[in-house]
Image (cartoon, rainbow, N blue to C red; front, side, top):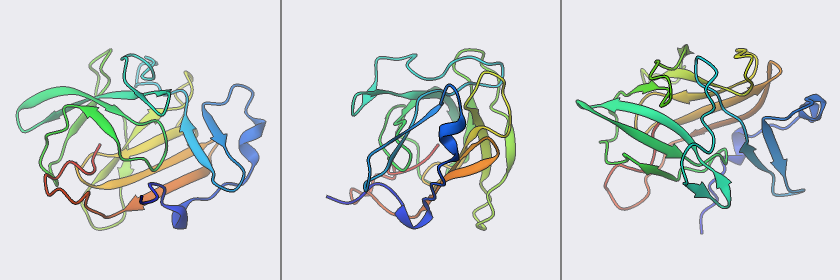
Length: 176
């Protein structure tokens, strides 16, 4: 079984314990697992647990996706570095997606460009209802492009950048 966490780009500093109501849970001693426990859309709508989908017992983070003239929900694993997802996942790799809040239908807020030459951009899933850019999960808008960051209290908690195939050739191994 392959390790689903990009450990080369994982950095834990310990300042996360200062947050009174953590939106990111960190489990384990040697095998650290980072789980997003809260995520909010651009108007403060909760995106965790709005469906029955769970990953290893943790409720999914749900985002809306528009791509190739279709619209649907994608339920993402809240475990950082875990590429599992359910819902509308039959999007061809490399497709640029519009990411939106499934509750308000508002587009997710643009954070900036991914600086890897892919042409992808980061969009914000806020970690607190205050909607601060200092506490976000930044997700890529290109399907099949695993690239995300978790920033809490303006500190990079975790970075995941991986290029891999899931081996079945259907292109659903990565994405928003």
